[in-house]
Length: 203
Image (tube, rainbow, N blue to C red; front, side, top):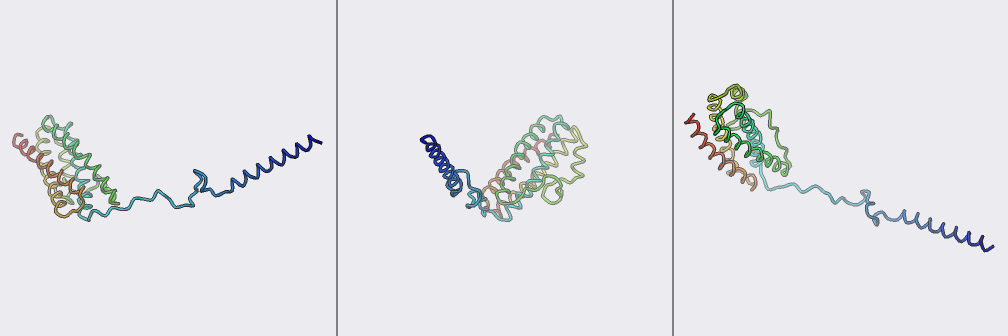
């Protein structure tokens, strides 16, 4: 009789424990870590859109991106088309300066909620200093001193256009980062224009 009563008691206790577990599982999920199934408000809301820019800033960045892309393309031609060491060094400097600026432009445009334009497919006459497709084809077909002269002449024009675009940004833009980039472009490319004019006089 004692053994049977013990078994009954054990069964009652086990049943009570199971009931407690079931009730516990039906409790409010918010009290259990990691059990939020989206019933509460999200804490990963998108950052507020920036408002510290105007249309001039966006236009400057969207035009400067393909402008830089063409300069980088021109710079990449130099090692296989020229034996002029001074020109090779200058071309490497152009690529090393403008490729990171393209990434900076992309980041800025994204922060404005604007996509970066494609580097290819640009209209050669849409921006100051841009080379046409025919000019780029002629440059690719040249080599030696003829290539050097074409490259220097084109890049002077290209840089002059970039400086003009940057000056417009300083006059009309409002975004501090875009204007800082414009100042960098003006300072660096004016210096390179002076260097290239000197090299063109020697070639």
